Amino acid sequence: MNGPYASIAGVGSELPARQVDNHHFAKYLDTSDEWIRKRTGIVRRHLADKDAKLCDLARPAAQKAIAAAGVTADQIDAIIVATTTPDRIFPATACLLQDALGVQGCPAFDVQAVCCGFLYALSCGEAMIRAERSSCALIVGADIFSRLVDWNDRSTCILFGDGAAAVVLKAAANPGIVALQLGAQGSSADILTAEGHPQRGEFCGKPVTRMDGQSVFTLATRAMIESSLAVCDQAAIKPDEIDWFVPHQANQRIISAVAQRLGIGKEKVVATIAEHGNTSAASIPLALDSIGEQIKSGDRVLMYAAGGGLTWGAALALVP
Ligand code: COA
Image (cartoon, rainbow, N blue to C red):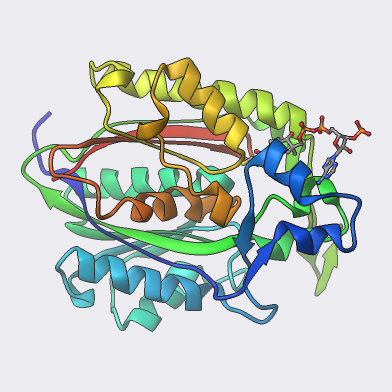
């Protein structure tokens, strides 16, 4: 296939100022810092204040990505926000963000694939660029997942954090997103879900996260391994030819199990879980931003995720 191709030109991120460590949970739940570290790898997470707006987190992340890409906001011609925790039922957070950035007229929409949302949004942006419907797309992964947490459920509340991160995808003559694969298995919807929906002015059901942790662990690990291998196959490369592995940050044990199965060394695996926890759609671009200084032109970056749905995906990017 010929160009235009889509290339990641800039990355930016934003975290809420407030950090909460594991000891906080041990004060009121039957848990401990030691258990959380050992079973998840999480040490602390950033949590947004109760009245915080997702758009207020997404805007500075987007502005940093725009500046890093060397473009201006008025050059952005598509805005896609991956989120499960939008500020409003509608309009989309992408529309609110468009206004906050002072951008006018371009398409703006949200994508909801929970922890895999960033890769789904990246795929939409890539497809728009390949189809010449965009030449400079802003792709944001942002979640205030703490909105969907039952703070008395020790098996889930310790896992999540809040954050936002963005990339600018630009049209390029050479391949940037080299390979991409997405999937879903709706029959596993109930193992990770936040039920509840609005009806006639009321909220029906409880809008908090419920999870069968062990099933998610098993299925997510398998899905990320298969998706990563599929993408390597598409690109005709072996996992050990990849420079950086940027996994969704859900559990250090999942990150390590996938890395071991792919046969890759720890030094290539980007892990921010200790500091961020699981930030859902923001997780991959936040991790990507954390290696901004170390990444070089020509590096191959494999991103992979799995989340509620069950959704999964992987994308291989070549650094321009
Ligand atoms: N502190 C102390 N004990 C806890 C605990 C906590 N925060 N959370 C659960 N436990 C307990 C359980 O109640 C259980 O007790 P029991 O044996 O008396 O019933 C015990 O620890 C073991 O529970 P289990 O679910 O087997 O633990 P685990 O090793 O599977 O770890 C998770 C639990 C949630 C950390 C792990 O399953 C996980 O990370 N799953 C994937 C989650 C995920 O990735 N979600 C998002 C996907 S995008």
